[in-house]
Image (cartoon, rainbow, N blue to C red):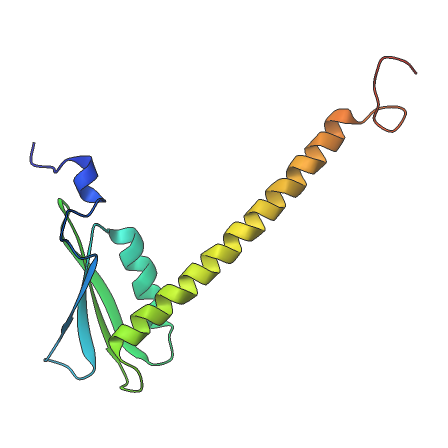
Length: 133
């Protein structure tokens, strides 16, 4: 089988860098970023979020081969910020957004569990159902 071992798809080896930047000389204010051990999930999320940033002119990603866990993102900015700053800003915003989502989820889950307990214990005498009415 040509597929790599599953752990090789998400664990960095000794000496591997998670992300590398290479300035793209074919367009102004453009860089290519290679992110190891990531796939379409992160690529699409970052590219779509970057496209909404005010100083980003272009953002796109590709996966060179399905068996090679490398994500390539190209970012072009208007020059007021660097592509690196755009990427770091997008990552910080996404971390904050997903942190908020996690907090809201935990709050709603706790409320649901509390409501479920009330429904299960609901009976005569304020919910105390010990068999005596």
